[in-house]
Length: 97
Length: 315
Image (tube, rainbow over all chains, first blue to last red; front, side, top):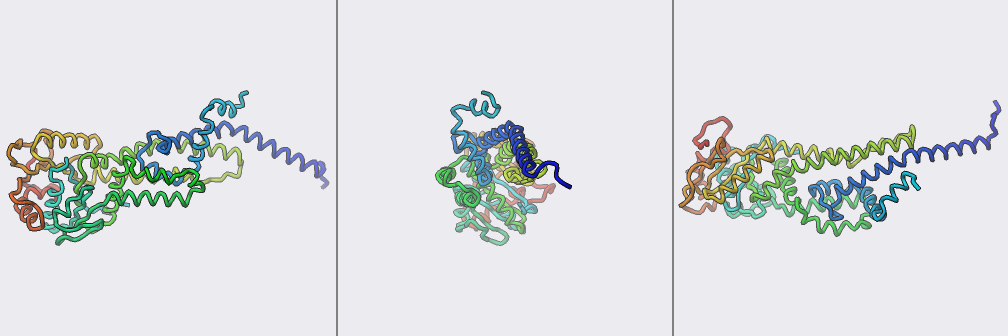
């Protein structure tokens, strides 16, 4: 059976659909991802706060979890760069100009 | 993890200098003499048992007489080993360890508050795991402050762990939402290692808490003087706050000139046993065995089977 839509146009439409789909999914999850990252940051501060001068849980909790928290340490380090302007960070996620 | 479930455990706790080491040594000698395989473990960083028995005990069980074994716990070594294990684990799992400069932090962490009592807890678990053949384990504990922190450790840690696990599960739920939307049908169910670790720590500390609260006898050793009495009462109340009951109060050096007679008010309802001042220094097996023989009735409370009568005073 002959295709109704020529091959090249079909491929272009498919590619456009994939891009649109990805953009829509990213927009849908942007706020949730931001929330998850903030909660991870809070978790990092609670567990690893001893490294930045904040009172922390019993030291063995920090030490036992430390081998599994490289990602959280990276988030905490990254947060330091935006710590001077947290509102700008939030507005960016919520798409407020 | 802890397999010494069949062993009867006695802790000897009290103010520094009241005679915990001597009382625990006497109790161990009596128990061993009654045919019970007994392990006497010194958890006091300022070890005395080697001086009392005139032997050189080590970090492992050493036989000192028939049925009696001695072990001294080196908490510094436990702390060092623990930090090395964690650091080695990090080196294997982290990509950017040098970037975070964790080595410097580890050099400072060994002085962290909390590590000493955690080292004691690890040593305690290790002793239980390796004492399955023992009928009795007597722990000669560190002075008051460190001992209380040891007993409080499981409860405090569990309070933190449960809150952290709650927060971690919230984070994982959010991540699952994101992955379901982004990946559609291709969901990748990856286990969260941090949650798994938190669950395993909760299980371990719960077991430790139950063992300390239900499976052990805590004996308070005191001298018949006002300072010792006041501190012993504080220890009793603090242990009650943590949920640990006291089995027996030992009045050591009873009959000392000027000592306050009678049973302390807080000890009403508890077993109270009294050991008089010895005329000779209680150093060496012969002196200890002789005194233990003279005071056998008073020392029976530490190893006799439950519900068996004795001549111990009851307040």
